[in-house]
Length: 159
Image (cartoon, rainbow, N blue to C red; front, side, top):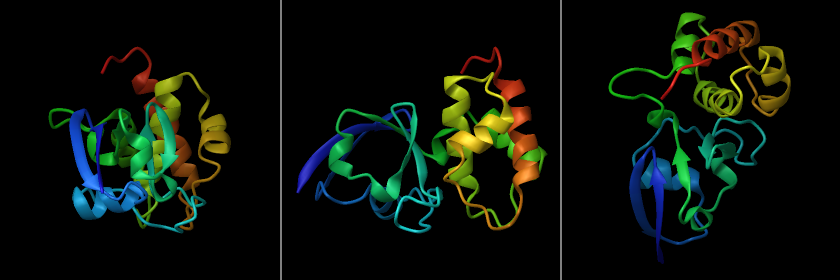
């Protein structure tokens, strides 16, 4: 057991646990943040995507002990003062989901890509940054529309 301190959704957080536990289970079981989903457990489907120090990462393959001093953002951390992030708004506006299971991971992948560069073309985000995000429902055309809308909303926006 070890105390691991990191920033979670903008707030200092410390958990005392086995440092080999996976971030996914710490988020869901210990911190009651259930927006991050368990999908394949092998870092292949993207359902468990979070953002660590500005880059999308798979929570099912990230040991909690590796997060000391880092910044972690989950789907719950995107909302600010009751206002959804532009990527979340765009997903709602364009119905960029069907069953919704992959949606939090997709949103986190898009968020990370567009935070780096809001000018990234939507097709490039979908083919590159979201290549490892699986959606079985076939919502990809609406997801593409959501990326375009979110990118437009984020250009010049300050958060």
